[in-house]
Amino acid sequence: MALINIETAQRRALQMLKKQPVGAGLELLTYKRNRGVTIIKEDHELYWVRERGYLEDEWTVTESELPKLLKGILRRECPRSRKVRLYSVNSRDEVGVKRKRL
Image (tube, rainbow, N blue to C red; front, top):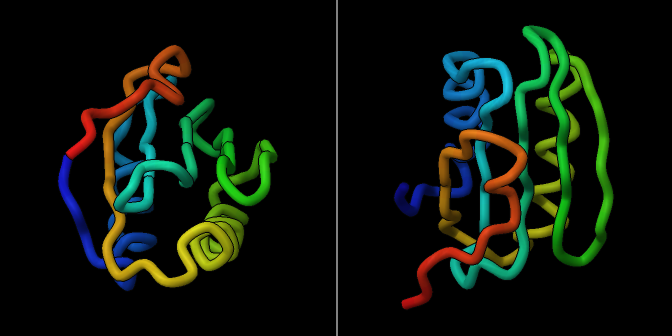
């Protein structure tokens, strides 16, 4: 998709996830695309979250727990970033696919 400011990334991602169908989601990556977080909507209230970068971890969280978790992950994985990349993912099969390099 595009580069967006890190300050608005969490709010924008949560807004877009509400509109996504079940089974689809988003991928937030650093500028170099070597670290990030993937969020897949499993149910109307459940989300699968995968952190990839400094730490490798997965969670299944509710919609109310997602903002706090996402804030912590973005702080840890993008400590000096001002911009992040936001991609739309149609299924879990597309998670971790190499994106076009500059």
